[in-house]
Image (cartoon, rainbow, N blue to C red; front, top):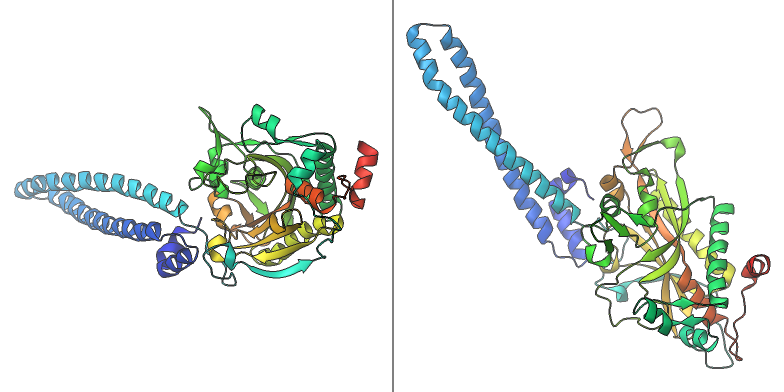
Length: 425
């Protein structure tokens, strides 16, 4: 979240940046109104406290005087008590207003970086980089769901019987490929890119969801466990970022770099009717996540490094892709800047997002109380957090099915994955 004082002192900027995202500014306007009420009440409280202090001193002096002075003191006491009661009422109201302000702050998005392109939706995203060439086929390439069903390695009908729509049953080659991809990605990020592997819980509490920005705004997108303060994670970003919630690191520990495999669970509320075929938009999918904790001075550079780490997965797999900078209207609620990596899918003749790499500055850290102590200083500061998919495993699988399909219906295993098949399967 943004700092309360920052919002108060930069209302026009926050309104402007919120509007750039295509988000109504009503929460910012409400914040300004409630904050002004808070200021008015504070002034009234301070005035009453000042009057009470003056009256208290006057009463004390009169009590030391004549009988007439003492009688006068007695007449002032009820007024002082009335002021004290009013102060108590105002303090309670101020507490409620402070809670209201905190709720409003949680509803205001992060400020997008000045170099983020302005636009209303993904049509305004800016492509700035491509890698590799689109594959050339001597036949009409099929979408992955046809490849998978022809090979009997993807079964959506039985998955629907088990769980409903937007679930998949992977069999044989597909399930082995999913496992090989997961191991390949984790090995690459730990052995070459310097990330520490962690395996977090797949269920987290509301405090964790709030810290990373899923709550309160995106409650409808989450799967909640009834009668428990627990949610199925939508991404490993949530538990991994919360590892250091309410903790203070030393500067020499930074950057901290974690990678984690987890299943992810999303209701996809509001997306019904879009990407309903195949593995594109599932309620459950696997992902390898990259998470960083950095100093404010290095987070911009670390975003570029994070992007390169995610890109290398596709490069080693020989999959053509492009990188786009998300425009303000397509930017995530907590992010200040995001790169999307979009892999080419010849069976669908389109690019699809396979990774989002984002810098959140101190937005998540403030919500989660994640700080560091600079070397030689007593006062701590908020860290900057970053994360990105390294990669979405299911989407990488479908990209292989479409890009490595053969005319006879088979699928070639990319060279970099062959050792994983030979040694483990």
